Length: 183
Image (cartoon, rainbow, N blue to C red; front, top):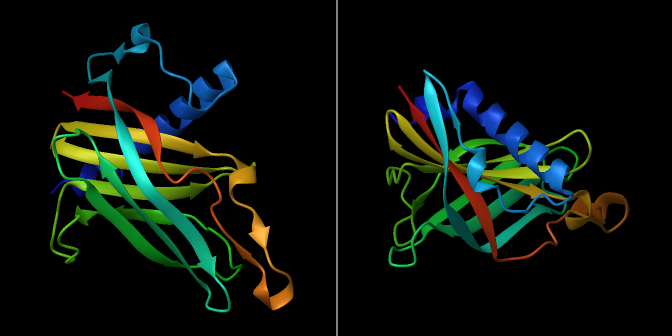
C-alpha cells in the first residue's frame, strides 16, 4: 500500500535535490532556503521540520560478506522513535547499496510492524553515500530526508581478508526533510 510511491522517480529527485543543494552551498547539511519550495500541477514540495537520527551505525562484518545498518529516527520529540535496521549482502566487505527497507516501532521489531517509515542506503559513484529516510503519510503524501555521507566518513579498516568498511561519522544527526504531495 505505502510502498508504491517510494519506488517512483521521486527518490531519485530527492537525492539529486539534496546533492545539488549541498554542492551549491559547499555543505551537504546546509539548511534549505524557505523560498525553495516547488509546486506544479502534479505535485507540491515543501520544507518540513528535520528528522532526528540517533544511534546510527553501519559496518561490513569481517569474513561474512554481510553488512548492517541500524538507527532510530524521530520526527517529533513527543513521539517514540522508529527503529530502522537491515542486514545486507556484500562481496566486497563494504557498505554497499541497500534497497528500500521498512522500519518498525522501536518497541516491536516484528516484520509485520508497518510504521510507514523506510530507509535506503545508496552508494554514489564519487565514493560518498546517501541515507534516504522516508515516511509515507498517505497514498498522496510522502516525507523524505536525504543525509549525504562523505567518503571520508566510511573508511576501510584492516588488511587482506580482514579488510572491511565502516561508518565513522556522527552517531546522532539532524536531516533536513521535504514533504512531497501528489495531486
